[in-house]
Length: 352
Image 1 (cartoon, rainbow, N blue to C red):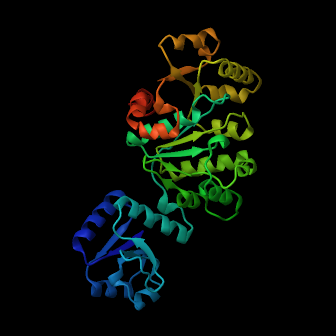
Image 2: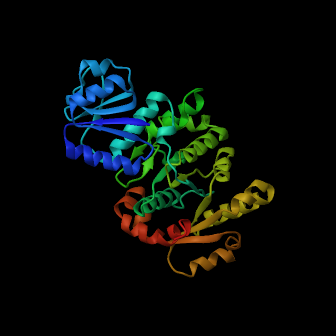
Image 3: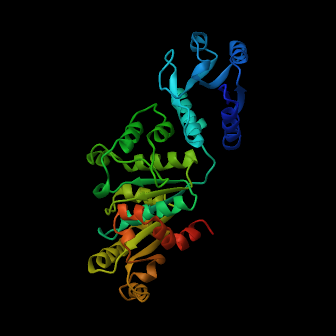
């Protein structure tokens, strides 16, 4: 992939090119700091992408068909000759990501935005509500990101799903023939202050009712095929629907948060009985561990045995009674406590 970078600022060009060479070895860089040399080159050579300072833009360059994608590095945000703008002074990683995404959208090709990671799919499911599933799943995403992992968090729980357009756009792509799903996923991602990536929310919760198990499968497989993220963390609803089962089948690890109250124990025992009826659940349970939530004392773990749950699943983490895990906002504010609590589990997931 041939990309031209052009700017009269030699220091800026050196920093940019060094970063691109390190982080995107698939790019063949051609660097210019002299406008006349740039003009001579572009008149007789072709490139996939040209990312150039606004001072290099003229009518001749705007008309050339030697470049597939033209982007103007801009500080003023004033467009010239209809060439797409890209913010000049921003985090270099964000600049590279935006260039790659713009090219993927312009060519409807996902090759430019693919990584080389082995994405681990981690799902949080519980048959009982009110066990802290959403806070615990988001807490693990925060802890993973703080540990240096690239984490995508997906919320499929209608009860905690925000209203936004991220997932709506992706669900539309799932239903639209000919639309590149990987490109649409990349274009719909948001990146928050906790360094977590999200496809945040739908315009209406009824949209989830129209999503099929096959759609969920296509979405998860597309995210894995992108190979961009280390972890995909999914917060699921409480129903044992066809969609949720498909999601569990595609998960590498499944965590069920448990609190020791009558409602949760009753529903967990019912889930265990379901496994005797549905053989598919047996395979799922082999990848399932418990997260014992709101632990007041070490002896509470022993209660799982006495109520008939402990022998079926391994306890992967014990979460003490901490304000940090009560709400998502608390999780964000108390990230250090969350990371410390989850450290043993992260070591297991990353094998140290």
